[in-house]
Length: 58
Image (cartoon, rainbow, N blue to C red; front, side, top):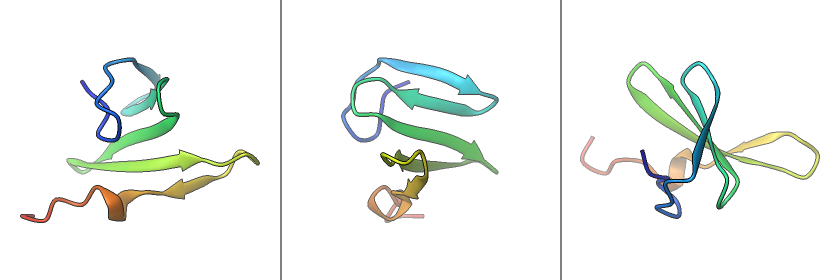
């Protein structure tokens, strides 16, 4: 598995169907066959980055 943002393979599993990139610090989760990408903010909240990684063909 590679990070969709930085292409690093330094990915850790943080939960069921949830992963974290140790290189660029984003969280990825899979729900209903779709990947959701979120950035972890300084206050610990999550901001969606899905609009940056949408599949233009889907």
